[in-house]
Image (cartoon, rainbow, N blue to C red; front, side):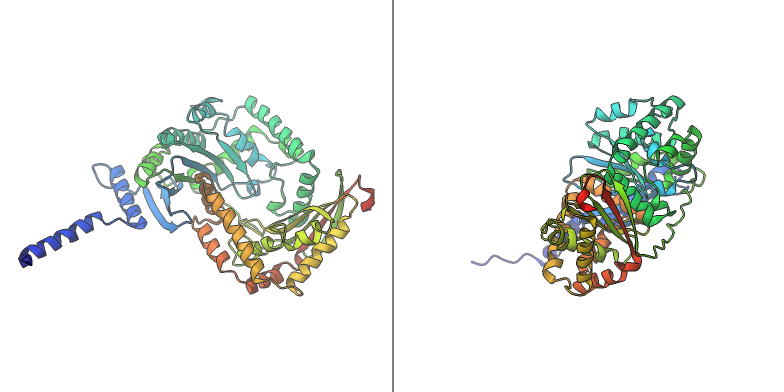
Length: 488
């Protein structure tokens, strides 16, 4: 027996009910959710009057290797990047300052790094020792780093600690206390760091000499730690002025990655950094001169004596910044020739017994970067032998032995594996995003760069190599071992 069909009116009502339920359950896209968060937050902070300027502005929502990211700016000028992950149990809290050693002026050599140390020494509200003690209570191990284009402060905390961490970070961004006694003690710490990591390390001294040789008076030619002489010359006034010039909301980027939700996380940051109480226009970001071009006019070569058991070799080609279209192809080229034990340079240098180790670097900088090959020569062999082998490989790369599809595929797979390993932890995601904002002004840069890298083909790598890795861009520095008589 066949069941009777329900009346048409009942069928239509049921269908409409299902459509309404479907609409209610429909999940918002990341962009829709971010726009709703923006609307709700601005309504909340405008108060009963419902008037006044917005306290937060959505700059964009971008795809990321892990989910999506949200790019925000607060009324006080602070940039905030959120990288939510519903599966994460902790939050990576990174503060990036758009000021590194390249931003130091005359008489300020090493001040950016010294200030990084002093940022842990207390504020007017939190005396020395308070900062670390409060964070360690939550299981956090705060750290920091200074480089050419930036200074960054990082920690990983549980979600329930977010409000306290935000208050502490906001406090030291605006009210650092620089006392003469503490400054004197930290100067000695930094001088000792300089002695241990550079002055007593022949390879580090060679790296500094090579950077000076490549960049000359360009800001990238300055030692990030400063020299012993420049560090001793830093005064309380010098440090205070650098802090006031660069440590302000408009010059900072806060990255929160992991167990965060837009509305509660942004509300916490707005309250901690005082963005809702700002009435005047925010202090602008420190004026930052663009990195000037560098003219190498190579090939150039020099030799220095180093206190090592064997010779050292640095060969580099001045290329381009990380936002240039060729940067991805050059990075792939570096991986092809030096990224594995079966790579071309390893076969030519390590397998033949000329070198104990070889490394190739292609950094991502705001300004011109050096495609650099570093060789640790075997005792009994000479830097000259290593140089000949390196240049033979580079010539074959351009003419005799073009890049193969197999080499390109293996190189991309190694790069992809390292990238995914970095992004597996929320700290690695925050690191990538903060670097992208302060270096290139765009948190979507990692995603766009990887799209270019994946799209690179053999002719693209070949063209970039022929364009940049040429004699006119080349600089060579030999570290001649004072102990290796056979290398003379």
